[in-house]
Amino acid sequence: MDVLEFHIKGPDSEVQELRKDPYIPDDKIPYAFWSFDFFINDDIVPDLPKLFIKICTDIFGPKQFDLTKLCRFIITVRKNYRPVTYHNWQHGFTVAHSLWRIVKLCDNAGFDKVEKLALIFAGISHDIDHRGYNNDFFRKLQQPLAALYSTSTMEQHHYRQTVTILHAEGHDIFSSLSSEDHSRLLELIR
Image (cartoon, rainbow, N blue to C red):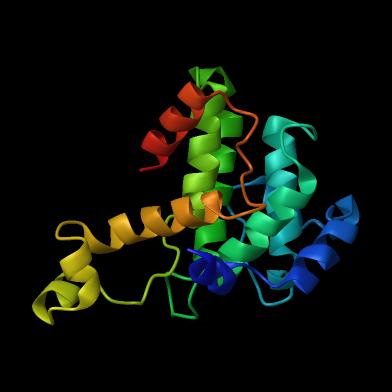
């Protein structure tokens, strides 16, 4: 497990850089960020970790997460997205952003805190370590992932990668939840 953790963790230098300056100034937030029309252009990509922190503090407040752990988590998630054409880091962010807008617009819909956490964090990590191929590809070519996960190959892999990150040292962003809420959260993310 130690070797796996070493290879999945985001670089400490990037974590420290984000931790030193985790909040994006209001005047740097793109206007469309507050709507469903938000489009990620190349200029905004470096600010996506800060914008994800903005999403988290907007919904859950500034005290919900240990900021160092949240910075470490988001840098690690970004590192674990592969540079594929579609199912990449920007796509994961876009899904989390869309879910944030839904949660904000449906605030009276009755989502509880655990459901909101599950939506946002499932969104950011839902395609983590995607290789750019579908499940049928892995099955037909008898790839190791298909042997490991016989059904919903990539979906199970994305979930397992997310849980592995959450259980890595210093990444336990949900440590303040009760064990019951933590179990429920992971089941909702699944």
